[in-house]
Length: 335
Image 1 (cartoon, one colour):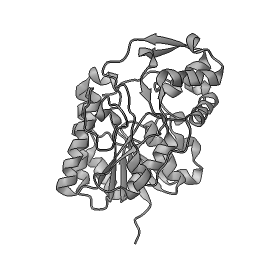
Image 2 (cartoon, rainbow, N blue to C red; image 1 turned 120 degrees about the vertical axis):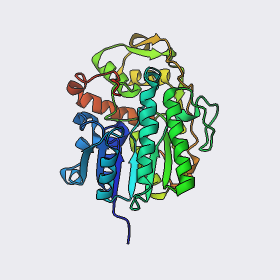
Image 3 (tube, helix red, strand yellow; image 1 turned 90 degrees about the vertical axis):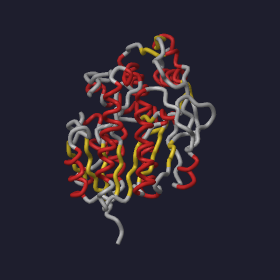
């Protein structure tokens, strides 16, 4: 008997989580989404405007805070009976992690350890995907392989690395069915406005200047959220305990050139738009990920080009400009 097509998404209010919910609903899955906050504004929930009413009828939302409601979340997990779970939930900002490091360790380590210790006792769970981050590697040269050593340089990165190491002990001791994904600089429609692509496009649409940290010399490899969602579901279905899957394109670009590309698409001069400011503390210079295992074992490949992804995100900004201009453009920390 095949497993039911049912999946739990922790952190369904996040950009990646909400987009993954939308992707799973499109693929015919029944989804339980959870988050510590009530559902976000619909403009930031792709499943609310990408999916049909019939598809949405297969989605349920429950509000659980990992720091407060572990027993309730575990009960809901058992009741829903999903063979698969993907965890996007984390305190995820880099610079801000220096200001309240204990908040990052509480959520990203302590709360997750408590969750995993309960999940390992639920026999119906066949695969747990832990959405990690390339920040665990720190600054690296060349292409970073999946077995690269950890060298975190911020409280955020250290908290994520600690949780990944904890999960490795559970995999060895309990054969806990955890696999890891690490994606570099995800973007697309529905993303929070403090991220570089939607923020740039929104400020261009509003005629506001953009502050560019450190001159934008950091090199990144940007990937569209649809490609990440595809890889994440493949990891859940075909990954084996302990597998690490990088989801990244082979194309790299500096932040400056990325902003200049968006300026060119809107006919705005880069020098008139960007204001150079000091860099953020502990920011790593490059995440150039080797996605070899995802390509060979999962049959995954990135399909959406950078230009197509920017155009896709620009349409979302333009179509929702009246709403987006009223939304916070800066990160608001929640303990």
